[in-house]
Length: 466
Ligand SMILES: [Zn+2]
Image 1 (cartoon, helix red, strand yellow):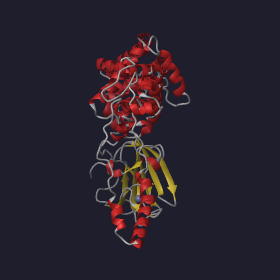
Image 2 (image 1 turned 45 degrees about the horizontal axis):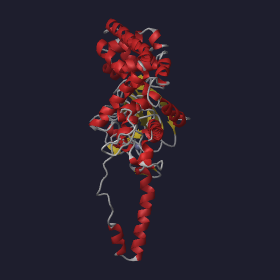
Image 3 (image 1 turned 90 degrees about the horizontal axis):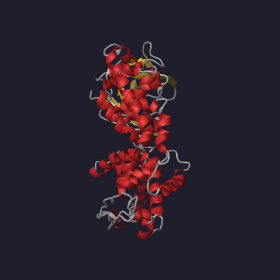
Image 4 (image 1 turned 120 degrees about the vertical axis):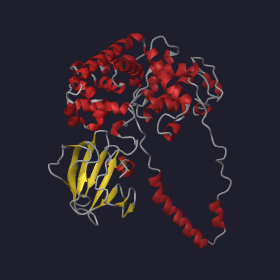
């Protein structure tokens, strides 16, 4: 692992606040100290609230099949992420995955790798595979235990001196294969679990440090790291063995060919159905022929099938490309949501404003009672509920891209109820002066996942310009 750059100017010579305090009398000093304490207790908890790290659901196993998805996608003109999503949900996937997660044949230091994995994988949710360790080792040192990099990384797994010191090892101790592998495996297992099984982030963290993955919200833009996250999975496939991977490759190419045939036969035929079931955004992302082709696919690929299945495949495919994050969390990629109220209704409350006892979790738009409220995007109504002490009544939509939107002080309009499919811009409600409000307004929230308290975000980041 290369050394992270450290900032030599980070040294504190003198605290200007202390100098200021020393020049003043005792009473103002005490007041200022009280103010500082108050600020720290009131503000810091909000600043330090950890942000959920984006995820794209790329598991170790998926990454090993990635080349096959891409080859088949290019040959049959089907998006690779659709192939990956169908495969991941297929009845065959578990057996394919187990074939490449077990032991690796004929790799150097096999026993050390397996005993360390036994130790560090124990009781962890996400398991590092022997092929991953072997691939990292080959990439890092080409199985030479004596390599020392220009940045000071040592041995088979190229550990930084700080990682050796953490075990109280000298550099010589650290080079010993059984030690070096054990510490390297520990780091890989920790990264994989800290990044919820995401192999790309795990490899990026191993190469450039977890701090950089968090800083860049993903794989850092360094050439070496970008290269690293591509190379290691290719090496992994090699270590898993041709014979293990052959049935997987056959399945993926068979799937791609069959889906292409179905998609060709479905061109234009079920566009209306597909749009009604999945929403315009999903259909236009993948094409109605592909979406309808998935619907028509043989159950040997799909298991249960049906429109719910097609919807799940499309959502999973969005995940793989990073358009959406794991658990349906949507990455901000520019505002796509429609303004939920007429554009002349002014903003009267903003995201994160201080309110008595809480911070304001949404955007307030004021207009007369019974002003029509629009769906901010395609989706399904999943909340239609009274909330006497708060919103009075509110509606919630699960959007097809994974976002959630809430409409407070709003009653349903027309036939809208839980389960109603809505399209972007469609009227869904009427604002009323109900619940805790000083005047008629819409309280609009956007969540990137299912937990409002941690997943709410500033709606203005997600709304299109008025
Ligand atoms: Zn509000």
